[in-house]
Picture 1 (cartoon, rainbow, N blue to C red):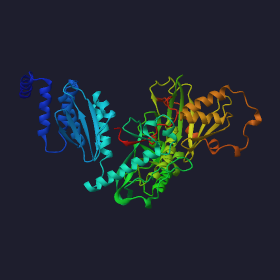
Picture 2 (picture 1 turned 90 degrees about the vertical axis):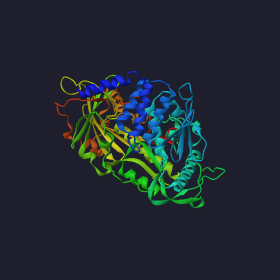
Picture 3 (picture 1 turned 30 degrees about the horizontal axis):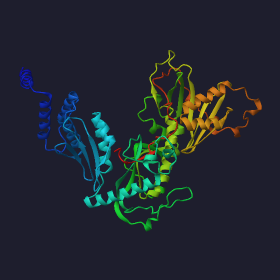
Picture 4 (picture 1 turned 90 degrees about the horizontal axis):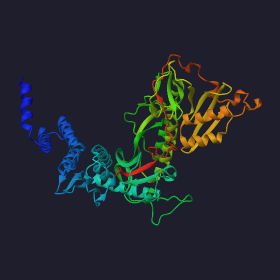
Length: 523
């Protein structure tokens, strides 16, 4: 009764208050609730709900929302008559709010530099997508959250700016760069983008190092620019470039993080002479790391992983088996890499090439369970008219796909070798077809299901080959064909839980996590 009376009293007391008055009351309660740096979470949620309900371009509402976001990021917040400032040690955001409501302009300024308009931040605020604004601000804060005292921070910022300018020279002008064209996939440094929308990135920033590293304090590219035989800028030797020993190193922060084979991790360290961070690293078979979070597995155990893929547009299903014993091999050990340390811009092309190579391997394996498409199980408990494929590793960057020939009903093998980011070779055993055609198809789609669908279709409609054209000796068969696991058969009572659709729009790994560099986190 007492609680009911209290609620009724509160309702009566605030019945005549406007939403804006209630909003300001919650704001004041947040400021007085705690001495801690972060506001009270229940009050934050209450304020967010009130602001969502308002949906008004009122300047005070936008200002309150920006202040709350700044507090959540650990940034300062200051207001003049028409402008809000969100401040950090090495940069600040300037948001102009006209009296009529809405957002007129957003600018970003690094320490010692003038404000630069940011279309990315402006777009999110004008659409009132405060969640996206907060995410972008967090990325920017993380990028310039440079370790050390004020003197070290300023030196590291200066070094980072020289690095970025050198990478821009090595890449070319950003406005000439199309993320879906050659620069992303073929250029030595990808496409360096500052202030533009990008999909997946390797963010250039600075991180702390237990061992002092010599970092550049000037450009390593002499003026006028000198080019090598391939048309790439030639840098001066490190000994000829002003530098300073600092407790930090440059970082390529991968977004999202990339599962990387142990052999590639070692190669990355050899390029930079800086060990890849081992903190909290967990090692597992590559395909297990790639399938983390996937809902497409019918069955997962130490013995095998089984996935069902729905190949569009005709609804055909394919099922892929990954024998556990084969993928537990040492060369398949991998770990998730969030950042790669380096000390010189000349190391970036080789790092990028390795990461692109790894992303090509990852994309092919991930295609076996990637896109999801819900579909009911068949009456018999197994997908009707589905083909079964067994995927086995043959080396760290090659694997075999064993399948049943649609005409002869004998076993056949497709051997896929990823020699480089754009070097994929295909060989068939027990199935005669154009291997060059298969390679082109694989490069264009980076999808095993799409390639196998095309291969089976060609084999089914092809004229029967001459009997002598089949391989007859064991020497002509790859190991995977002779060692097909008899234990990988699917139980008759297994039920398809999820079906997966490869993305037909994927034509290459142009948007791999290292395909585009962001100088500033999507400013």
